[in-house]
Length: 115
Image 1 (cartoon, rainbow, N blue to C red):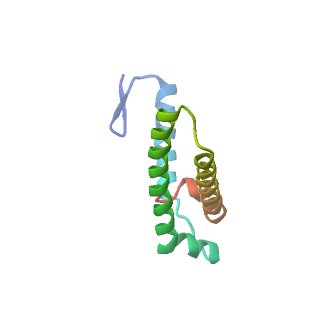
Image 2: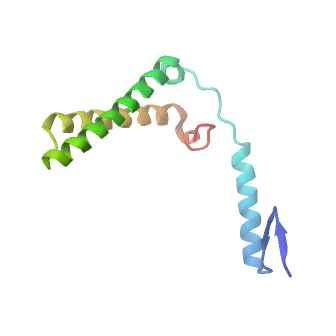
Image 3: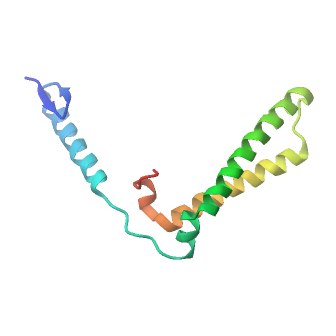
């Protein structure tokens, strides 16, 4: 006997049916979770257009540096010292950004509209 859970057809195995029902309920729960309004300087900064612009500029600059360093590495079979320092800067920037976002959103970071 086949059972339909949502739009997916599940074989008549009761364990599979129970799992898919549980999964469907869990997904509905996750969709219903709403993050409370965040206040404070850090939350306002992260939601500001200046922060969004800065992050976009860093991502674009990182893309350019990746292209340049790849080309340099192909030609010289080594990475220049300044390129290593720049890569460390980008990594530090991304770690700082994700840390600030986790500090503001906490576990909702994984559930919010931007997840």
